[in-house]
Image (cartoon, rainbow, N blue to C red):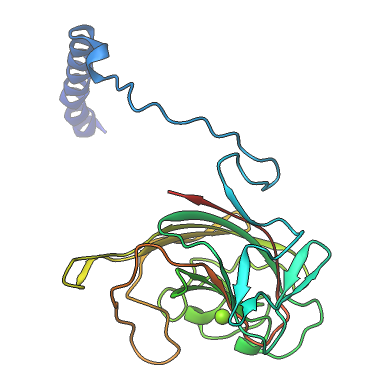
Length: 249
Ligand code: MG
């Protein structure tokens, strides 16, 4: 015990002295020198219970599909009960507007009646800029490859957790997306990044994308426009969506 005490004693005084000098340093100088007043953040009124904040663009409020289109014009999915549901075989739908960096809130529900397994159960997907997929899948007691389960960045990043609710229940994704940047010669300047919060659980923490989501093979970036539409996938399962809003960053 004794040698230990003797060792600690000088260390205590060093800590005490350095603490005193920090306090002394803070007494000098002007605290105003480190205050930054501009730009003043704009006022955004937050929503209640996942309602859109005041500056959000509402993409779907349950009343119409007017902000979406399908491959032949009008969005062919089913509008019912404040939700829109994939009409299998009619194809993906996309927003009429194009987006770059965004914060996206979207709610989804896989069918209550369990059909299929693995990738065939409640499969859909949210394609950021129509290219980069955040997987939507019924991953509640339904094993598949980890980089293809709900909340994966399809075939690129395994989610940090499986936060899936049972089929038939509504689930939320809050997604923060940074679009890739391309140089004038078409080469990659900055890769895309995605953060995903699933039902309040962080499952993708600012992961870097390797390129567009592919079913087969390794992804590779190809230069594209700064802003592109958001796409929801038709993967032959009647997955529903509601309360979709987006904030441009
Ligand atoms: Mg999918």
